[in-house]
Structures are given as structure tokens and as C-alpha cells.
Image 1 (cartoon, rainbow, N blue to C red):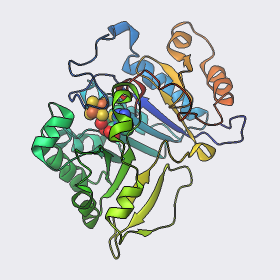
Image 2 (spheres, protein in one colour; image 1 turned 45 degrees about the vertical axis):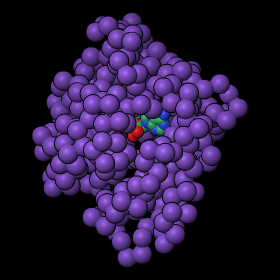
Image 3 (cartoon, protein in one colour; image 1 turned 90 degrees about the vertical axis):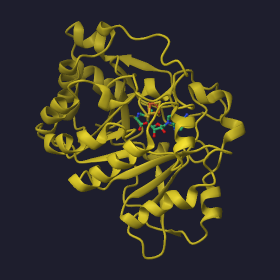
Image 4 (cartoon, rainbow, N blue to C red; image 1 turned 120 degrees about the vertical axis):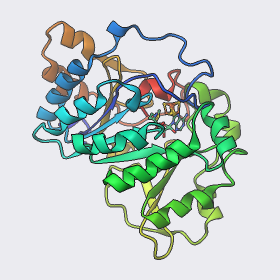
Length: 318
Ligand code: SAM
Ligand code: SF4
């Protein structure tokens, strides 16, 4: 599928739930989600499968499951097993906080998941609790090991740097690259919960390069990837820098998002949504709606000069 700017759209990110077993300070309110979704407002797993099938038949070949926390959605392994058997799916991935991964990595791999990105902001158990408000660092570290063991590779670690909290751990986190794991630093976005403090706690990715001067730039393998990559000399794992705000990657954007309530979002930083759940439940021509919606995908985002969007990342699907 092409949009009106000629970009090939082949990547769908699906939020399986807005619920999460963590309450990260930049993503979720401390007390959890206030407006809990009613069961009927969420897409069922069967509906998600039907929509994925349509997207795949239209040319989507890369799918990422995210959330909220995708592993807290009951039936996720069965869904992956069905999706992995669809002809045309080349890359099936997940972004997870890793808390449940130790026990789920093997079934996920057997179901056909290719690889995982795991979020990890700190290696200090006290700070981990401060950031996630309820996570267990050890469980996540064991989950990372298990993902590597069962071959959900390449495993990528996603770190959001927060000034004064974890910006002194850059070197320790980069040490994961020595085990063949990619580490990607994502700049804090002023979205939802983080809107109030993102400016004051913002750490530019340039700080990563200043801190670890020996990083060498390496060639970008995938132009649609939002990360620019570096590596320590002689080390296999890569260090990715993702600058969603200071550096736009809109010109090469190949992705669209589906929320757990069935809204198609064409741009992470836009509030515009197309209601595919309504279309599905009212027997509309889904493929036609997907195609015409993708044609209207925004050319670029304007986060610098527009109001911060209200939804948290757990609702959008990060
Ligand atoms: N729960 C899963 C996880 O944490 O990996 C998947 C969903 S989470 C919304 C996806 C990613 O979005 C995580 O890596 C998280 O750190 C990131 N994220 C959430 N809020 C963010 C913010 N305000 N700025 C930058 N990244 C954010
Ligand atoms: Fe949950 Fe992921 Fe948001 Fe943290 S970033 S609260 S783990 S959805």
C-alpha cells in the first residue's frame, strides 16, 4: 500500500490492551487507568485477527504487538500462532516490559513470534521500582536472558532516558551490546503523563554520544527505522538512538497503528483516528476503508509547535 506521498506502508503496530502490570511514571497514572475500557469497547482477539488478515492481504508484512503490556492480554499466544500462519507475514515482533517473559518466551517463540523489544530503563532495582512503580527488575533481566535463549532474536532493549534518574547509567546499559543485544535510547516524549515534566527531564541523545565517545556510527540497514545506529569498536550489538522530536523520520515512515479499541492511527503524533471497530461491527468494506485511510496519512508530525497530545503511550501503543 502507498500513501499520497508515495511512502510504502507495510508495518502495522497493534496495541492489544491499554492495561499494564507496570505504572511507568512517563506513561501511566499512579493509580492506573482512570477510564477503564468496557469489555465491548475493546476489539476481541477474533476481531483483531480478522483486521490483521485484511491488513496482510493489503500488503502489511511486518506486525508488532504492543500495548499497554501485550503479555497481560489473555490469549495472546494463540493469536500469534494464528497470525504467524498468515501468508505474507515476514516479521512478527513484540514490544514488552519483560515482566512475564521468563515463562512466556518459549511459548511465544513456538507460536511463531520472531523477536522482541524489551523496555529497560535502569539496572538499579530501587530506581526500577521508582520508574515502573511496581516492576521487578530481576524478573525482567531473567526475561531478557530467556528471550535470547529461545531465539527471539535479535533482542533489542529500549531505554527512555530521564534526566536526574537514569542518565548516569548509559555505559552500563550499553554493556548489553557486548552480549549481542541491541540497546536503543528513546528520547522522552511530552505525551500524556510525561507532558508535565518531559521538558525539564529531557536528555538529548547527543548526551549518549558525549558520554560514550568511542561509539562509531554504522550504516543504517533499514531506512524506515527511526534509529540511527552506532557500535562500540569490535562489538556485535548495536546502540540505536531514536530522536522522535529533535529528528524527524517522517519522510521514511512506513507504519500505522491500531489501538485496542480498534482505532486506526496513521501518525503517532496526531489525534486523528479512523474507527475500524465500528466499520467491522457494521459490515463495512474494511479493506476499502484501510486503503483510503492510508492514502490520507499525514506527511509529517508537528510536535514541536502543536499542543501535546493527551493520550498516554499505553493507549496509543508505543
Ligand atoms: N508495555 C510495553 C513496554 O513498556 O515495552 C509496550 C508498550 S510501551 C507504551 C512502548 C514503549 O513506549 C516503551 O519502550 C516505553 O518506554 C515507551 N514510552 C512510553 N511513554 C513514553 C514517553 N512519554 N516518551 C518516550 N517513550 C515512551
Ligand atoms: Fe506499561 Fe509499557 Fe507504559 Fe511502562 S511504558 S506503563 S510498561 S505500557
